[in-house]
Image 1 (cartoon, rainbow, N blue to C red):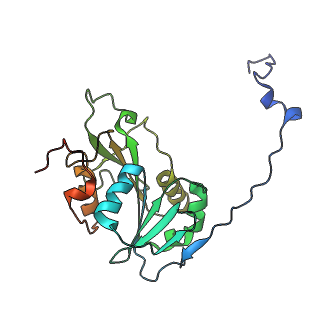
Image 2 (cartoon, rainbow, N blue to C red; image 1 turned 90 degrees about the vertical axis):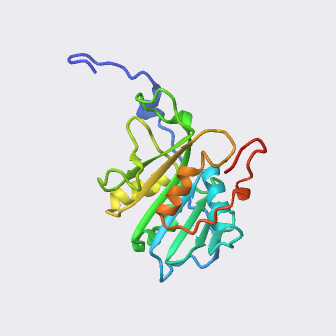
Image 3 (tube, rainbow, N blue to C red; image 1 turned 45 degrees about the vertical axis):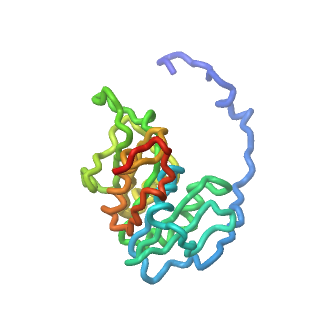
Length: 226
C-alpha cells in the first residue's frame, strides 16, 4: 500500500469473493491402552522425539520395559520410571502435536518438572562463530530466563524448532507453566561413544537410570570403543 494509491493484491487468495470454505475440525478417535489418568505420584514428565534420540532412550533407559499406557496406533507411548518420572515417546503418525498436548494437558498441569528432548541434523544448526560443526551439540530453550541448563547453552537465533517439543514449550509459555526443551543436533554417522556422549550426560543430569552398555547402541563394526 502506497499513500494515495490503491494497489491490487498480488494473489487472488486475498480476494474475499474467492474465499474457499474448509470443513470444520473433527477430533480423531484416540484409543488408549492402559490408564491415561494423571498418576498420583507424577513429578516429572519428559517428552522424547526424533529417531536417534528415541533409539538412545529405548536402548539405555527403557530397554524391554512395557509402556504404562499408549495410543493404540503406537504414535504415543508413556513409560513409568522411579521417583515419579514418566517418559512420553512420540512417533509422527496419525495425530498432531497439538492433539497430543490436549490429551496430556492434565499431566502438564500437575507435573512439577516438564522437559522435552528433540533431535535435529547438525547441518541445520546455524552459528556463524563455528567454522567447523562438531559431531553433536545440545542447545536449550526454556520458559524461564535461566541461561544455561545442565551446561547446555541457550539456542541462538535464527535457529527454529518444531514438533512436539516446540508445542509443549509454546503451551507452557502461554499457560504459565515451567518447561525446558533440549535440542540435540547430531550428524548422520552411526551412534557411537563420541556422538552420544552429550546425550548420555543429559540423561544423567535429568537423573534417569542409564543402563550404559555399548552393545545396545548397535555400533558400526569400524567404530572403536574404550
